Length: 142
Image 1 (tube, rainbow, N blue to C red):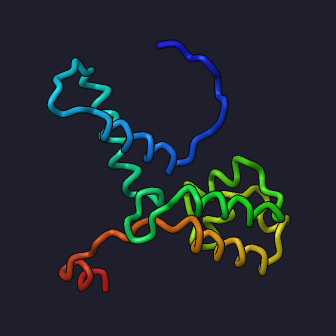
Image 2 (image 1 turned 180 degrees about the vertical axis):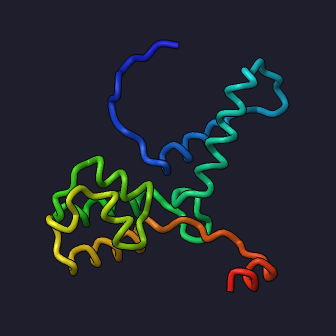
């Protein structure tokens, strides 16, 4: 394998998940191809991981249009590209998680701006799927 362009751009979880879905769809199941078993395992594990992240949330799926609009709407906040990517991949729902995604968040933004960011994230990026809790487990937690 040859690397043609080193770090041409960073990919969001959504883009990786979409690419893996395209790979799966492009494979013809009737044609037997020689596959490296470890590569197939990696693809399956990465796909399963991303399905449990905001990129794979079936209740609020990410889309290229929603993410493009999100990037446009956060321009006034003057976030770094890496910070925007973190917001897309992590989709923070609370201030402590937002502080981890944005460097010096409390010094750069007012409380209102941080709340606005969380609202934009919820509206355009989504959130991690909430794990299903069985009735017995819910009673034990209470």
